[in-house]
Image 1 (cartoon, each protein chain N blue to C red):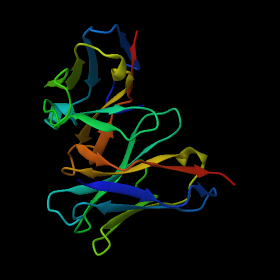
Image 2 (image 1 turned 45 degrees about the horizontal axis):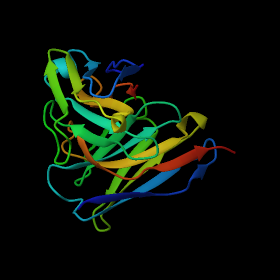
Image 3 (image 1 turned 135 degrees about the horizontal axis):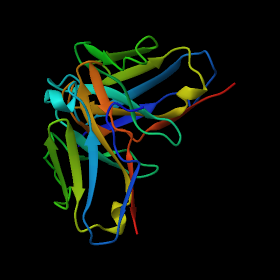
Length: 111
Length: 120
């Protein structure tokens, strides 16, 4: 059971908007620690999509956006494309565990 | 461009110690503010953060693995290493090394990953 909770799966048609949630607690997201998001394609290394809640690394399309409020965070993908089909993970720091934690991951299917 | 590369045995026997090394190129492992970490993904499961280390030797470990994990750094070789003792089948996973922007921060550079299988 992951410290950060994500939906196991989401889906959407090409061009649609898809949100992925990441729910935490007062010892991680709610404590003010930043949330980061990764895209993971099979057989490759995870790729940083969003860092520090809302920031995109160079080269990441602006179709990907992040937000954070209270004990939760969200990744939103707009203008969904077939190449976006992947697993997505949120990550933060937990003060009770004194370490980084990942969400369980969300599998995005493009219909 | 920073690059990380994992190396080590792909097969480890149960109860033995898993050892992996990450070689960093294109940048110094002694860069201030950066931590160097390990993450794993068992087959069919999600990502699990194992721990990280600062060039000075300060470490943070996953509390569920802390009794079995040691992460060390060799600044002269620009490498850091993972040792996981008393392994079992549940430790079979792809192991990734990474650069972490702070001990609480994002993982912005990753190695390609190394599959380690625990089996007799």
